[in-house]
Length: 280
Image 1 (spheres, rainbow, N blue to C red):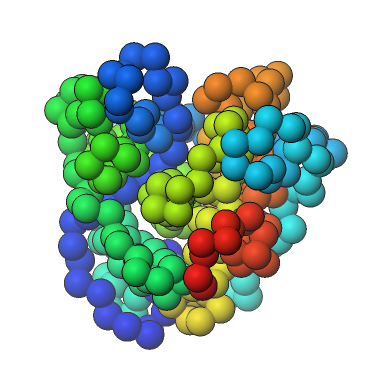
Image 2: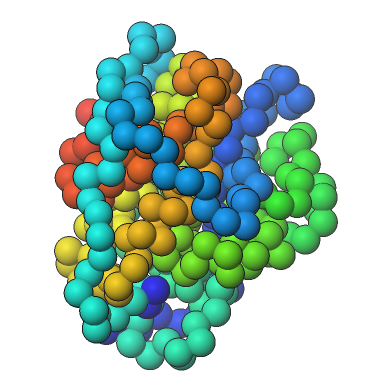
């Protein structure tokens, strides 16, 4: 994926990936838990059967179960010959570091145009060893990436991140950063759902809105297969089908996650239950 030739971006080695919310029991009572990424399998999981239910977005803090939501509302890929995510001056063998630096620049540009007084995350921290980076009192383990509210930063395991890039493709990296940045946006807007699944599905929706809206204005263009690549990646990070939606740490089934992402992709932030403090 390479951005459309709208602007040139210097390759800054800064990256961020995604998503999982760890129970707070292991942390100091004053430390908010980080948002974690799971270990992503080498191959995408099979497409789930149609008709899977997905909770809708309740008011933050609500305990009421959600309603069923549709699966992906976008399918297929763009016309052959269009350019991939990235930008015009990118080398043909674009690297993980190059692509995530582009994604970081575009996602920050996106949110700065949507939220008055937007403030980027304080830093992006690569690491290679368990416990090399701490989120408050919690060590961040390898094979993970996280947004940490304590210090307002994103950290990622370099080796794991590059493996994900190779196995799932460059398009999915843009989703990963968009999702993780979505947690930073929730922190800035004071969004705090009672159940983690709502927090995660909203971050999926934010990622879809950022990618879809960036395509509409020409910051990104799609090449053949990019949407399938995004969809397959979402299948890979889905919860097991028998996991209760209300379980702490739940993120959603494949149908739920693709539904939330593509709702944002097609309908922008209107689909993402933005709070009244949103000024976009």
